[in-house]
Image (tube, rainbow, N blue to C red; front, side, top):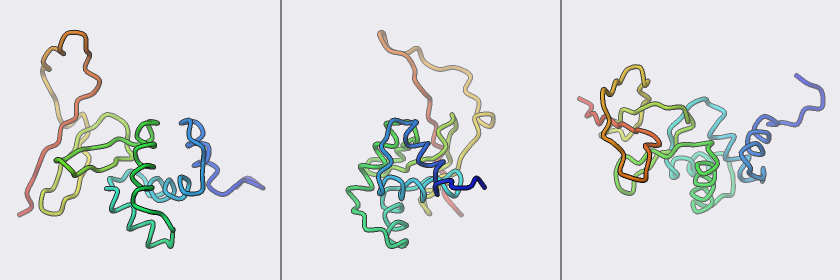
Length: 139
């Protein structure tokens, strides 16, 4: 360990490199999001985890922070149905299984799902990304 290194300096650098000021609340939420590797969390799940860690943060602040992180490219929002979004810490191209009963997401590698053709993008647009969600029911 580097002497005199600030705790969570890697997260501070991550926020700064994304153009975000590392406020106390952003840093605390970033710790929850990024300290366990790739995760899929709803705003409500992140809020509960923050409260479980005795963080005084409102659900509105959690939503605002998640959207700021998404806009900055630190997260990817996965909308599984109207009013139900998850925020994915893995921003690389990949797809998802959505478990309808347990309401969980699991990554699918782009290598495991091959699309042979895509429709032409409407005039004046380009395809930015393809998101595939395979919905499954647990038996």
